[in-house]
Image (cartoon, rainbow, N blue to C red; front, side, top):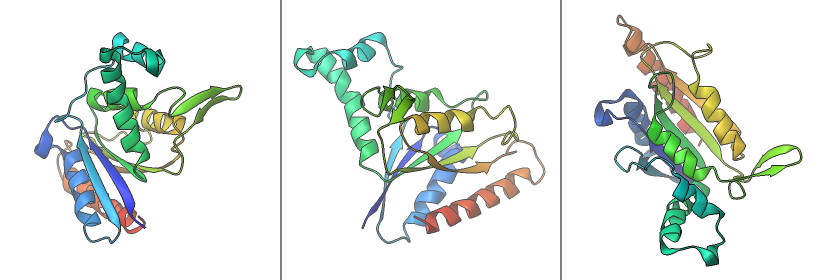
Length: 202
């Protein structure tokens, strides 16, 4: 049985980004695993526009009543949701920009989090419709934030994933990368070791 991994990267530093380096290490380790396939979507190289009213509104129009423009707008979201459903493990390689997630990654979430498609509202609150998936967060940060109120990223990502029904989430942190001394080397080493352990369990 093939285990399909969707790798999402969102570093504006491209190959010089440390979150991209973590993603590359994850992908390299999967090459030694039988039955693991990785799809890489670079959300900077294939940047999505910010969600606008025309696109949001097109989702609300019945399929048979959509204009050509609306069908094109809906197709963008539909393709990303189909890709999400088509994979077993979702890996988010995430740099921290001003205490938040990159806007490119937010634009992806804005397309895949659709009421009635990937989640629905019930009397007991939202219910996720994306089932049987796991997620991994690979977080690269200049400072040290994990476990503090300044780590707005991790709760935000887990909430969005959980809203769609993806509640099994592992996190790998490479922190203090800009703090000098041995912080960078030690943090990256520990993160690579944690990634190795996660890949072994795929």
